[in-house]
Amino acid sequence: MDLEANRALLVAALARIPAGDRAALQTVYRLTSAKLFGVVLRILDERSEAEDVLQEVYLTIWRKAGDFDAARASPMTWLIAIARNRAIDRLRAGRIARRMEPIEAATEITDGAASAESALADSETAARLAGCLDTLAAHERTALRGAFFDGNTYEELAQRMAVPLGTMKSWIRRAMIKLKACLEPGDP
Amino acid sequence: MSDPIDHSPLPEDEFLAAEYALGVLGAAERQTAARRVARERAFAAMVAAWDQRLAPWAGEIDEVAPPPQVWERIAASLPQAAARAGLWQSLAFWRIFALASVLAAACLAIVIYLGAARPGESLVAAIEGGGQRSFVATVDVRRGTIAVVPAAFTGDATRVPELWLIPPGGKPLPVGLLKGDKPVVIAIPAALVARTASGATLAVSLEPPGGSPTGAPTGPVIGAGKLTAL
Image (tube, rainbow over all chains, first blue to last red; front, side, top):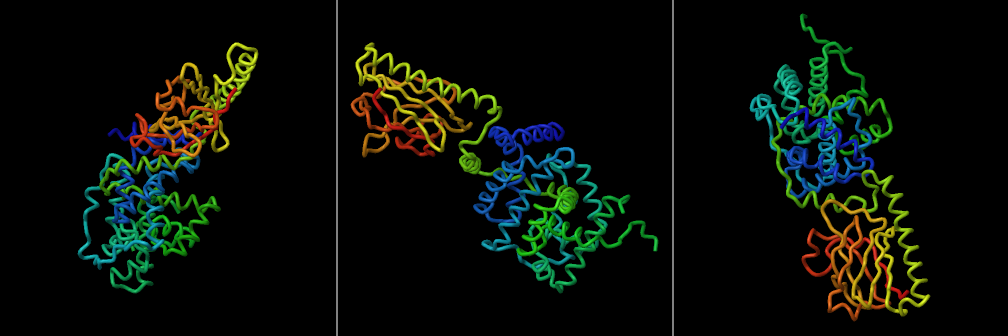
């Protein structure tokens, strides 16, 4: 898939939704539902819940498309944030079991950094993020992964990595500071 | 220290924005943060900036095609009477069209009254629901046909309008498929001719292409109206 063409199609379709154009929503769905379903399924790990949440995601897109500003954000970033937020909200509502098996920084599941390519992700920004994540300490990166991919809370991460809650908070906050400084070195 | 990167702490609000975007907050804190996103422009911008930083990570997640019924459920949940693309022009058009068809029916009534046809040979029903008149149906009893003209009908891409006849106290019986963008004339099925009478109800539901597979309405009923003699 051609990233630029896709992006232009998506931006145009999102712009038509606030007028009530169902075909535009269907276009957005056709272009993005497999990615967003992957994102939601990764967090919820339960198919019927994930299907339910995916439906909520597109109804949210239908209602909020007018808020999307192509000058300020990439459409995929905006859509992925909606999908993650709806999935995490469902997780927090507490009806499904969350991933709680212990994780250790030493045995980090590396299904990732190297394979950070996708038809929908801008490979340049993906590579930059991967490079910056590599500058983090292994335990910081593992904690961030647990939050981003599994939707874990501070408490859950502390339990999974067998450290006190305060330690987990400072790991993640420190990782955030480093990540931002690495991604935007010029910014104060 | 030769660390070239500035590791000074972030303002508390920015931490909260980062934690919200990452998804690490518990239920209560998450709700509080979500309310701030909805109300505070500056906070929402910080969250959006963190979404932007983290989103490329989702590139690692494999795509999984959702089953087709997910789109069907989404399409069915969209508001039926919602304005569609370009409708601001065409809504006005359809309103005039609907008004014109009512006027035409009134003129027809006058013509009939003036003796061109015997009373009872024509029946009309305005099919209405959700505050909208979606179709106007006129039955020609002598010819055994129903002409159905769309008024303020907004369809969707995946379903077609289907006309049903409901005799007083009876179940809906399929009459035929309608078109959302032009009038259709349907020959009344032989079994229904006797029941197509004043007091019966015409209704329209949204069905899969080709019509309801079961012989009864399976989709939402978008409007109904009683047949009355002109």
